[in-house]
Amino acid sequence: MPNTELLETMLHRMAMAREIETLMLRHTREEKFSGWWHPGEGQEAAPIGATAALEADDYVWYQGRGSAWAIGKGMAPGPILGDLLGKVTGATRGKGGGVPHWADYSLGIMGEGATLGSVYPLAAGSALSSKIRKDGRVSIANFGDGTSARGTFHETMMHAAAWKLPLIYFCENNGLLVGTRIDQVSPTANIADLAGGYGIPGITVDGQNVMAVYEATREAAARARAGDGPSLIEAKVTRKHGHYAGDPQHYRPDDYLKDYRDPLDLLAGLLKGNAAARILEEAKAEVLTAYEEAKAAPEPDVSVIERDLYHVA
Amino acid sequence: MSHEVMGYNAAMGLGLVEEMRTDESIFIMGQGVVTGGWFGMEKGLVAEFGADRVIDCGISEAFEAGLAAGASIVGMKPVINMGFGDFALIAGDEIYHKLAKWRYMHGLDVPMTAVIIFPIGAMGGAGPEHSSCTEVLGMHFPGLKVVVPSTPEDAKGLMKAALREPNPVLFHSVQGLGWSRGDVPLDPDFVVPIGKAVTRRAGADLTIVTYGSMVPRSLEAAETLSTEGIECEVIDLRSLVPLDWDHVLASVTRTHRAMVVHEAFRTAGPGAEIAAQIQERIFFELEAPVLRLGAKDFPLCQSADLEQAAIPSAGSIADTARQLMAI
Image 1 (tube, helix red, strand yellow):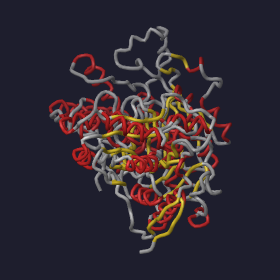
Image 2: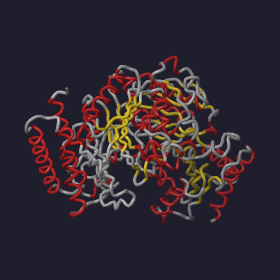
Image 3: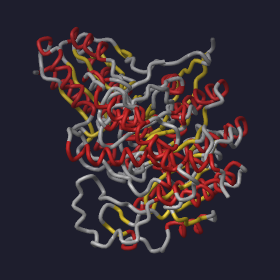
């Protein structure tokens, strides 16, 4: 039986990510919003379970929907929402917008590749660095089912497996690449089946079940740290909303969500007494405060355009 | 400190070796770097620095450049030998998005040292997909530094500067000059600063702005023209990003005539930007329009003879200079 503290921590993080989803869906409909929000509601358990299984200094390269990768690795709702609303309080200090680029290297949040499926070789870069430095860190390359089609998926894993890099490919398979079903373009039933070609473990887990994700990631991380090389984890998740907020979703059948299981409910059910209710309330309040602060925060001066292009030693 | 006469590629390799000796975070990756590399500059590296820092990889340019981005973000200093500049396009996302923009788009002001070696230009029949001059791409996408050494001395000095530079550098080695030889300082503190042009020949009548393979050809043309009473000033840019505008504009302000010569395609090549800026910035100093000379706007032929006919020669440079003087 998992320890209560871990369950509570993960529920708190999932609830924060969920509250950001709720606020953002309303915000994008009703208020000024610059960009496109890609909702992650329904998929929170995968990033939260995966990041909970990592050490604080492990590297996460993500491309996920929603905010759960950043939340899971320790970013506060303030810089997350500040970015989404394009305010100076955001993680990018004012360059943000609907497609987030949250990064905080002190937290191992390495950033998002918005050319989807582009973080594989970058994660191999940090993984190779860890191998050279022998620093014991693990790198995660997060991706979706659709981006398993990328050439760099293969280029990177071929080398990572040969060199036994401390790398985890973490796929959130929600079955849809934008509006196309993954089974229309994938020859295998599972993305994890591709692992066999590289001689590495490939495991498919129920991505709505945070503990299943946690256990799989912990095992893959231990293997990576032991010098035994990469793994591929595929979390089967449910994308509750469209590709972007406002997507009319003509491609989805009406009964798409008939078997939907809310990952928060599944996790809350494991906690005793009123612990879950209390945690959900706290998370909601925390996010709501951050949202109000982000709304009140100033927008950046246009001089932000000319910042961070080159580093001056 | 002493000097030694050595080849262009060997000098570049010496710059790399010297920096690897003092900075353990530098590693090199490419095809055949363990075995000495296609151009010989990596010879002996694995014996000195070990297999962790001298790494052979598959034919996988996107992987290599993306890995360089990821490794440099976490503080390593990767050097990727891309084999050919043409392969920049295979790794387009990784070079022009990830290396160039990652820091910017995440709002992070951190050092990011990475050197991507792109051998560019005609080398005697390497063909249309192994001879491209891709350096203009690094000028177009903000966030990268771009160098093109034309001498062994600069090949060494710019490699050392690139490895001390906290920004990604596209290091274009010139294939046509790979076996040229020259005097190279052995002082390990010798560097050629990125962003500084040099005047290779002084002259009062016109300024030839050039770099890379066209530097020796421009100097040859200048000698011919001198016998006709036309004195050319030849500027070797050495860096395209940042470009030493002060140096260029000061020269043209003296000569009042300018032409840009490069091996890259003429249309939308580096010369288009350089000519435009000269005309925008010192229009009233000019006696004539700024002329441009580059490769014909056709893919380079596989034939080594046709290859030379498609790119500027000392003769065509001299012809353009005469034309400029006649305006």
